[in-house]
Image (cartoon, rainbow, N blue to C red; front, side):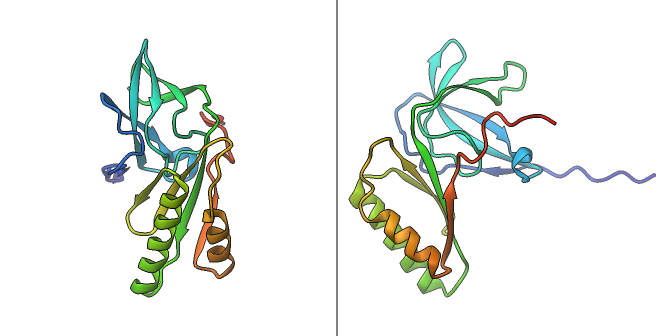
Length: 171
């Protein structure tokens, strides 16, 4: 009987986390509950003591967690296991559809500029996947209109990252 070769996990990483207050701690979330089997998202955390941590990045793939939420790690695996407290932020995610390189770059530049003008924290994963921090009560400037227009034109897909809870229900 031949076995299936074990493959190395794929890591979704944050190269420029929104919250850069040191000291940092990194922990993973298994993304299989999102349908991304074999992938782990590496979250940047700030240690609050007593096995509690503040999320210091904007989650790209993990549903139900947002920037500044407080979590607890599984002591055995070291992975993010429990959401202890929400901070009230939401994650808006946008996936820019493939297209002409110039058009994709122009849209990415427009989204980045709109986020910067509005003071919205954001992180890019590659050149097509954007995660935006939607702070409670914030004025997001022209960013929502730009996302809506680009979505209607078929240039991107966007949605909130809190459509499911964290941790996911185990079936």
